[in-house]
Amino acid sequence: MLDSDFEDEREPRRVRPTRRDHRSRRIDVMREMESGVVDERPVKERFSREFKNPRIKKIKDPLEKIDEKDCVEGLVVEVHRRTCEARLEKEIPDQVGDDIKGETVTAMYRATTSKALGEFPAVGDRVLLGQVNEDEDSGEGVGSQKYCVVRVLPRKSELKRPGPRDSFRRKLTLAANIDQVVIVASVTQPEFNYGFMDRFLLAANLNNLPFVLVLTKMDLLPNGEADLTDDIRDFMSIVDKVIPVSVKSGVGLERLREELLGKSSVFSGQSGVGKSTLVNALVPGAELETGAVRERDGKGRHTTTSSSLFDFPGGGYVIDTPGIRSIGLANGEDDMDGETLAKIFPGFFEGDLFTCKYSNCKHLKEPGCSVREAVESGKLSRARYASYLRILNSRN
Image (cartoon, rainbow, N blue to C red; front, side, top):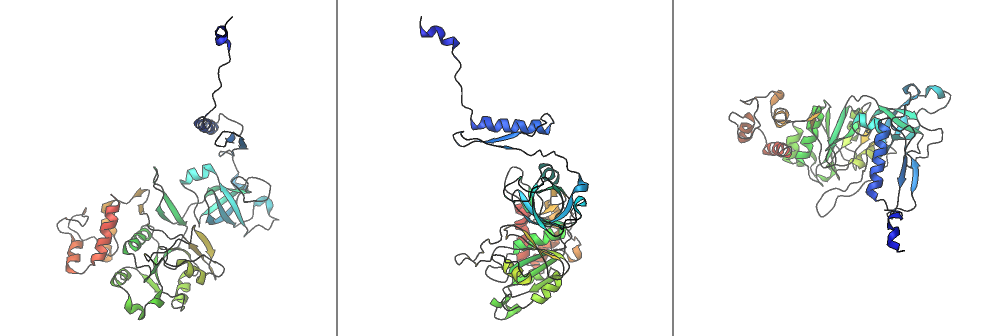
């Protein structure tokens, strides 16, 4: 009898599953769980590159219910990739005897919370925190925390910036529940960026937030404000509050403290303008990392890597944000269109009264454009008009 006679009776050869197979299985399990098919919490398997030594752990059910009456309100003071630091504001009803008010805890994000909000919580958010385990908060790894963010309370204001260039192009919130926007710009080293400042001023106006311009490094100008460039002077003419300061000499710091007292202020600006140095001078104990400007191109180095909230002496909050290169502009849920930008661009119209001949004028080649007439007559600076064109073209 030949071996070929038994070929049909042999066991089929086992095919080793691929990484794609494992990924598909995990996705299917999550879909089943969300649809209510799976009652038990699913198991997540992690394999090495050779599919050996699997690491198995339970996946927390994002649909698990936590009664909000057992939650405690907290203030988000710092955010990370998958967790946040929140300061407890009120007592938990079942734990009145525990002195937990004012304590800062690490809380993980729930899938349903982030989905409902459309993004992760931001610094300055008021949140409801639910207790997910009885153990102490170890803070090591997602799922090991004692609390999770159940719900983000409604925001009264927010400041957004462009998100990563992914397929969703979502915008990210720099800070929430703020009273004013404090933009820090240096008079030199690095040079004043007209377009960047215009974007921030527009964002503040769209959110009805007061705009405070702080000019740092005044000690580097031998004649003080007399040495300010024409671009800086032109921008100063369209903002309500300008505070020149020098951390080294102390000039302007007391006036700035009075402006911050009792308010929630978000500090932002480009890298290298001295924002972290200024916050350290205003808030004792902040101890933010500072860095020097690069000699080869005069630009700053990133020292602040995430937004943080600090208590301001005497009352109020200071929210320090990372140095960024651009700021997003949004009008409600949708991006602001070119016609709206042409109507509300700062400095174009006295009293914000649109005076062009046509209501859809974008100040390009349209007849009867009062903006181009003002530029040609010298009433409006060419730097301001060029900044408008850059922002308009960047939206196309």
